Length: 104
Image (tube, rainbow, N blue to C red; front, side):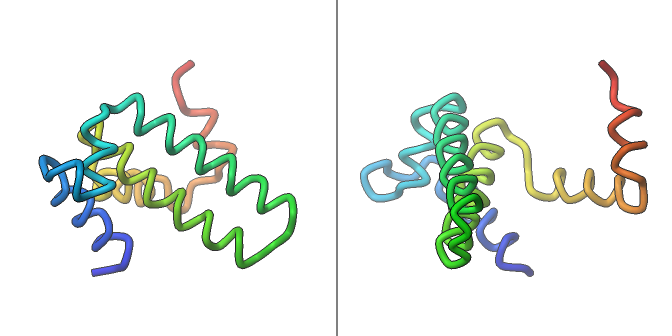
């Protein structure tokens, strides 16, 4: 099991935990919209560090982005396994071709 899979399992295990004892439980208790907002904040912080060029800070912010992505997904009932399956489905397909095949 990868670190990302272990983290996803930990996020799921915090569902319903005491929000006073778990940051994950606190985020989940605030609802999907708050989880999405927090993910967006972390993504912006990662973008800022990417522009600045500080590799260590970017690495740290990228870890925050992955964690908050997993929380946001969990808030909407989407599992890491589902996301990985979608990535596998896309594997070997040109990004341009894949994007063109999307509706809308």
